[in-house]
Image 1 (tube, one colour):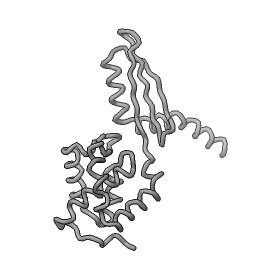
Image 2 (cartoon, helix red, strand yellow; image 1 turned 90 degrees about the horizontal axis):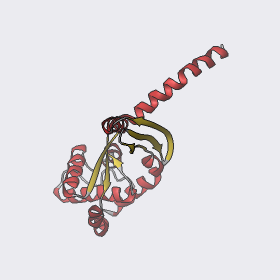
Image 3 (cartoon, one colour; image 1 turned 90 degrees about the vertical axis):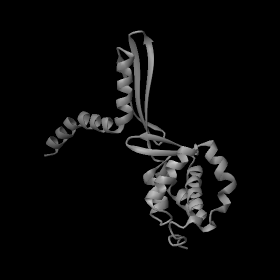
Image 4 (spheres, one colour; image 1 turned 120 degrees about the vertical axis):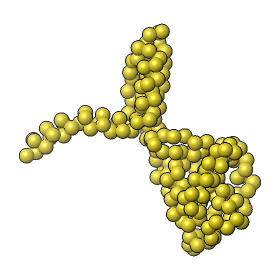
Amino acid sequence: MSTRKMRPLHRPEHLTESRLMILYALAKMQGPLSVDQLTVMMVDRGWMTYFDLKEFLQGFLDEGLTTKEDRDQMELYRITSSGLSVILPLAGTIQPAVRDALDEIISSNWPELMRQTDTVALIRQNTPDDFSVTLKLTENGQEIFKLEMSASSAHEAELLSRKFKSQGSELYARFLQDMTQDLYDEDLKEDL
């Protein structure tokens, strides 16, 4: 059964249900979802507009029902305990066909939805003038990159941390390309 035309957009009686649908999806995922992922789940199926989605997400932040994390130029939303206390007793008020469709979307796309890269930067002070900075990327819980660096000041350590947190994936891709390009070129020459 198609759920695309189940409900008209912008009808006042559907605004509350639309909000509950987003909270329901966040609760079922038990992890963060990006605006893009939520757009595919909600907007692409005609359940709400992108602008409604963004407005609802901002409202959830204002009400403390979700948190937002900016990671690698993505906004990731996670439900809070307050959000769970709202959705748990009200999940049954979502149309059963819509709830079933959301359950199907989540269960059939779980690995893809959960596939994400986590960027971690840890700072440890060894002496007053020596800081260790550990920079890590994990994908799906698997560590794919780790770099240990030394910094001579707290300020330098913080700069390294901030830069890696904001551009870790891009820095890793450039590092990998730079480290393997000469080897790739040599392999090509040998094959010719």
